[in-house]
Image (cartoon, rainbow, N blue to C red; front, side):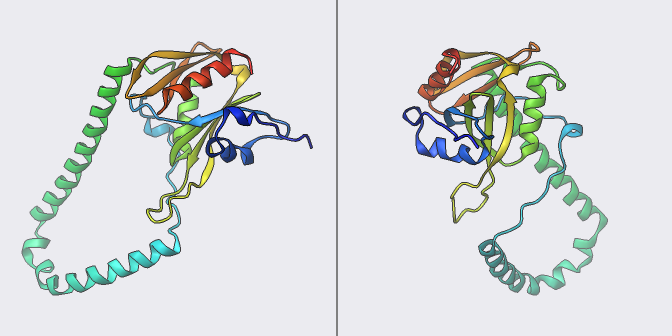
Length: 234
């Protein structure tokens, strides 16, 4: 099997090493860096989303939940008489609770929409092409990968994004997993975006079908190095 080769001078180990298990035989890692998601990217329609699979809680999380559950149970027991009262079980009270849940979900959705509006005002258009385009499928696949995308890399054959599966608040060690990849033969261009906001850098990946999508890094120099690697044909 051919040995994987990298260009270590261009990459910090924290960016380079997480990709090594996901390289195909003989694939060469050209450049890797952090990934910063653009909040202005459109939300994937519900009909294109994969079913959400809840993660298995760790042993520590199970113990914490057990302790909290016991504590809450001790507090809740004296309130049993109240919860069994006609007031709490009244249909109007239950309806009010359902309305409250819907209001909370609506507020969350509005917050997300506000974030998207701010990002769009800053960056402008961030994607072009329908959901069946290469850009659309790229975003659908990344969304359906679940978890948070945090790393991106260019190899001699693919553009790859990795997601971090770690949800633990105690052990923050990343649990890297495959997010999405697209063949370099499907990429027509990678252009830097002229704006720099808070040190962040955006670049636009254009595909051979005419669609494109905005990707980014929290560090503008990382974005510039990424674009430069593509333009050199590395």
